Image (cartoon, rainbow, N blue to C red; front, side):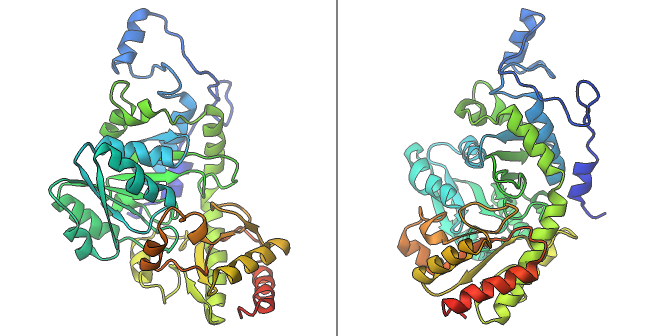
Length: 399
């Protein structure tokens, strides 16, 4: 039977304290105990259903985590204060001194900086590879490798990971496959393709209103318990705790994710096809010209399309900047980083979200100066949007 993530979210039933249709928000940093023995047991991790301190967990955070675990098909989940607040504890929980990580070379700039510049101080090394080349991925593995890390759809080049193939390699070498699914919620369900752990930046499509940052780790009960352990859990001890009010807000927005993703994908598909027909170098997984189009199609859940992210290459940074400034002036979107907003967002990743990656490595992976990354919005009339964008491109001699 087909996996239907939106149904799993819809089937959750939460009642508020007074019968509200939304769960009550637990606006407390600490919780009382009726007996000292229960407090002791909770510190030892032996008292289910008791809340100790909000850095550990809150009812509001658990509601959101349960919904996201249902969406991804994992046993449970823990939410964090940012996407990086989800990614970094997972890697530090799974790896120690002299351990090794194999990672996709095209990943979010913050993740790349953490792996390249920060985590080596703990004696943890990373080899960056072309994630679409399974032979290269396997060749990079050593007896010290503990984690294989990738993004379902990579930031910003939109390379698509063969999650089934990577999962087989991870199992063969006894590694954990960690997948960042931020760009493709609902469209791809990595756990069903063999991944072990799923992370998201909730800041993006899942929340969808660009008003907060958040993250989540979806995985097994064992992993999440380890992350939350008061004595040795990386999520607990590093302290990237999501606020209860924010968790409640994200949970409300999660309920419309399926509608939003369908519209993001519809609009992105329309624009990608038009841009490509106009002769622009366009990258979008929904185009037959995308090298991993068939792979994405083989992994995707019904209805939600190929996502809201696309790139075009206009040849130079000057042209890219001029176009983005003109589109913003014409109210076609915002010159801003991030993604998943109701308005279209555009940026030149080489000088923004991927600026942590050295220029020579950007060139090696195909991240050119003229690349513009679009997060396509929820425009009701995408044909009008396209016509207005085309006028901007003609004025600047891009078309």
